[in-house]
Length: 190
Image (cartoon, rainbow, N blue to C red; front, side, top):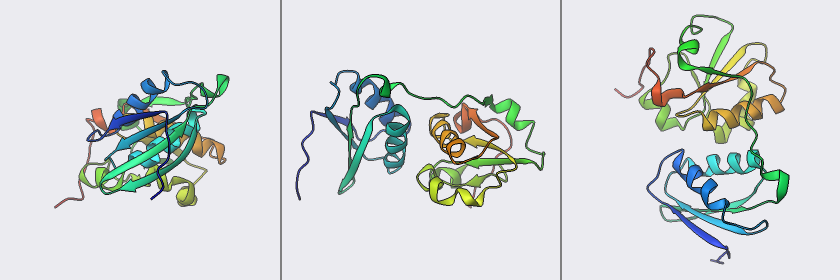
């Protein structure tokens, strides 16, 4: 296999979302524009997370190579104004969402990985992992309010931006998401 040259290797093995992105953000500060970082991770969700983060922050996601259990992600640092990270403007907290769950005009979209959703999710939430959202967003009704949740608010922020770009006009990011959810929840694990 051809090896890809990078300017910096970041070890994010054994870390779960959002830590690979948090460590990558910090490491990017030490790189010059045009340099490439290799992020080594074992979290399967890191591929979609890093790809979406790179897009939202203006960096270039180059690709991922799988070597056994390790995913080697390659991201090129962009220059100047491109690195200003965008944030979705419409945000609510968990308590506000809990009060809206009985509204039939509301869709709760859970963009965590399937395993995360299976263990604990909001009753009635639609599960579409962030990495599948672009190809499956047609499953959502654009006329309804879409409240996007993930574990901490990072993936849901990226998902909300994507939905807005694709013509969804009433999309709200829920922060902090499932990491601090105290409302009703259910599990698919028996």
